Image (cartoon, rainbow over all chains, first blue to last red; front, side, top):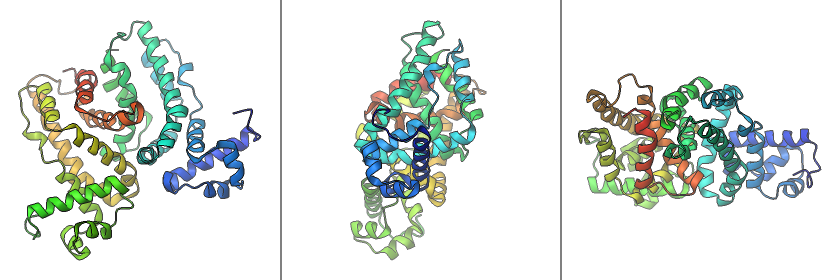
Length: 191
Length: 191
């Protein structure tokens, strides 16, 4: 990124924030490079030179939104690590993330290029980070190495984010996620 | 429904199937009553007289898609009940359901009327059916009545449906759901 970028980090952050705002307002399909250019007072040529395509720009913007690397979290216990992850996210941010996830669920299905970019830039790094947190718990003896739920933690967490507003008409907040981790994630891991 | 309907059950089923096909093809926002009328060779007036509004028509079509009542399933054990639920759904149908769920995740957020209709016609009856299955397991002593995961089973299952294609690029099928139930749902319930 540093090599091809001639934008300052501040300007880059500003652009990503505008992309995410547009994504929440109008959804992925209606988000155009024209709209991003207009909102950020930049030229479409700059946007394409910098990011190549709309899916990559959106995926980078989403990735920028997640500055905390999960892998860096290491409190000495799995429950402590989950607590630290929750402490790093405020409730308002979680509601925004939940809105983004809902907005992307369908777009991803119709746009293989977006799915690919999201997988490489967001899903894989997050999965790797989460996996490190879980593998440390395995090494500490908190979870059996052959527990089949180890590979299903992302599914459980995505369910919490998607289903909470749909079923209970409640926003996702850290209190709910903590109770979900205690009731579902840790017991299924046998931790 | 029987009172105001002058359609035969066959014709009604045909209409619902067309609505679901359109929903998978173009998504909720682009699905118009005009398109439904054209596809099914009926008049818009008939559609509105029969169903009142697009959200209600869509919710009824989705409900029609789920003819098996979960509450009727009673094999004598929780794992047996889940197996019976899976045996009632074929894999092709599950992939179609997963596509519908992705298509609706965002629409629901933008359309309070659709969310309301979906809650009344689909979510509440399914939740009630699932809850009966779970409460029978509580009465048999398989699950403690105060287990906090009892209220979170829908979240876990929705996570399986949404995350499987997103993370693993695999369709949801009964083999995956069985392994998810064994690894996540039953252990979190302590069953």
